[in-house]
Image (cartoon, rainbow, N blue to C red; front, side, top):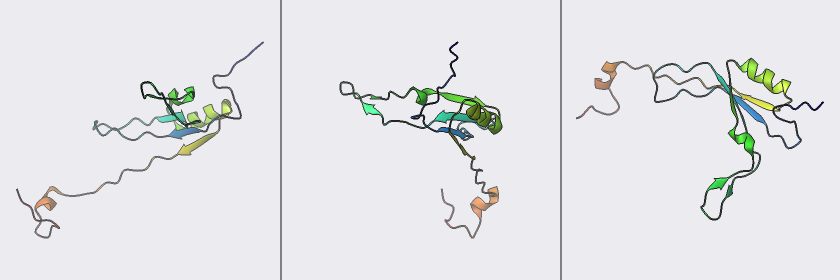
Length: 113
């Protein structure tokens, strides 16, 4: 009986990246706490000579899986024998500033119209 896994483990298998996606700048709501698994580029992209399009024979670049937690993404990689790296999300840098600071006397740049 031939059982196939979704991704066959091969020596040329690229590393999977697990990361928390950044917040979308166009939306004000909080990003869901999802984690993304995608694959690093295995071979360089080639330029098609006639039209100039870039192409790649690596189909794994098109795969993007979403998980509810980091542990689920890691468990998926270990279950399927995938090499993986986890990238922790960077916390956003918040600058706490009052509206009155825009008009402060000791501001770096004077307020003008």
